[in-house]
Image 1: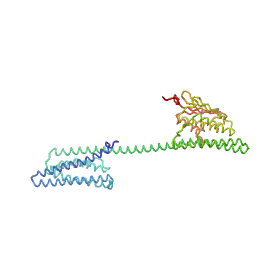
Image 2: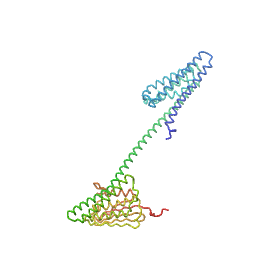
Image 3: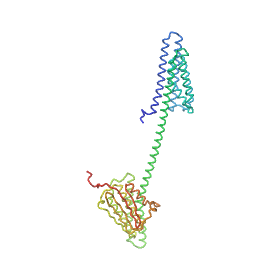
Image 4: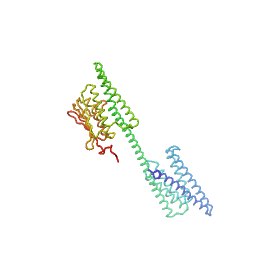
Length: 433
């Protein structure tokens, strides 16, 4: 909201305008009283004018003292509003008495009835249990009667205009005051609404921050599961097999298994470094490994590990020529690599299969990934989110969904993990011009 057109600014301007009006009317009345005294030809009139001028000056001084005290309380430089509420009726009472005396001495003081009407209503509104009614009406009628009938009763003339004029002034001032009050209530509602909006925004920001933190933790845990945990699991299995081979005197087998342990540990170390760099400064600047090379490495590692463990599982990789060397979007490439790695890990752990086939090709602008095995099949209800540190099908499904793909599992006599990604029809290796 523009601070120069906001309701609080408008209300502040109206309050200042009230003070200016009071000062201007006091000055006008004082000038007229002095002028009347200067033109008087009788000593009594001069004395009366002098007394009237003195009372008007005293009235202005009391008004100024009250507004300064109220300003100090509002700014926090004086004790709280409780004291102001106690003193405000007395201050207003003194003002009204001085005004009545000034009106009895000079009818020019009647002009001050307009700003005094504001003060009467404002002081009465300080009492929250007091609603508009007989008290407000009675106070305004009494003020009008002083302005309308005191001058004629003190020999200063009269007539219809002297009675109707103050009445119109009181009615107009009361209408202006209620308009001011309505604006003040609207400003308070706007302030409360703005405060609530700020609180809601802060809550939303905190919720988004927590959600982002949880999402990041989930992503890191998946990365650790898909890289380090699987590598360490292979190291444990190979080390047990090597110990068995040494105990049985199969030195060549043990050496081969130790070589695999060294290679697996080295790959895990590289994955760890990449993960740390990814967390510290975003994705590495160097281009990722082509998807065909990454899948070939995974398949070779699984085949070598299973052979070292004495398992006869064979894994075949079939990559269509249109995919080989193609630069896939980073999220799609990562999802493909992780799905293949996790699927083959599940085949090794649970399927009891003799053969697995990884197929990757493009059909009508859709990247198709299938990982088939001839194992015993799976119970989807039991492996959607396995116990322990596993992520299983849920982790794969999340990765694929984050990359904008579709994930499905077909099971029966064997299992097929099927993933689909919609790609651009244009090969990114082509010249963009």
